[in-house]
Image: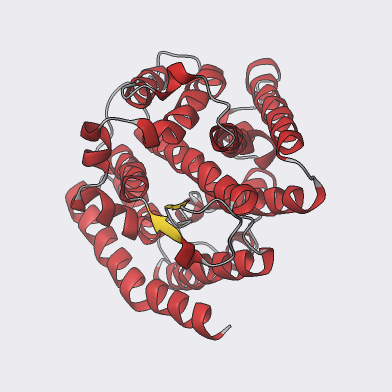
Length: 340
């Protein structure tokens, strides 16, 4: 998934320069945990729980927290915000889609330019349901939801004034999105992908976390929630609620709000949790997470459908991801941020 810098404001006034913010290693580690869950869920599935789906929710709630901090607490300039989002996301995505389309030609997961275009225009989450679909690009649905959330939150930051109004609006949109998903899946029986790939449903994960972030910024969270063990407890309960035995709408009606609460309460958590998340393996995984997210999908398809060796395919995914990060993603981002 995409990487919004895991930073926190360290001054009380709005800022426009990232140098005024300090990086929080445990948020990088949360991102690392997210991609670890996706990789385990795809290459070494655990019976009774879809860790890949759970990992995506870890990504979404982190994204909601960080976007809220950047847009509504730090008041980051929108022009600079979108430039940095583009430089972070698009070069690696473009190379991945083009390379995959060429390399997979003639295989069982080959895809054509129509599917590639929907991925590159961030419309795959709807096009994959209604128009055309490609197994090697199925993970792009979550990137589409996140990109749409960038736009929606940026618009709200411009149109709506006053923190309380923003919180009320984001809260209302979250409830509507969750209700939309529950009705679509439970009542209308649309199906998992037809329901939870849609931005109008899944944006709730991001918006809920944004609401909690802003309540925390205004010091409006109950003191009880700021205990050192609350974040871990909320995370554990959320993971248990993602077990296959629990009906799917409950995952999003109860478990996702708990994850959103957990990621926002990491600031108050005890050292054993933040220390684990701040460890070198977790933060490095977080650093590579976007490239790993992009490249793991085609190799996962070979494991899931063809029964290929998961260890071999995971190693190949890591090799491609690290090449992508160090040759494409990092240099392109640095160059664009300096010169654009």
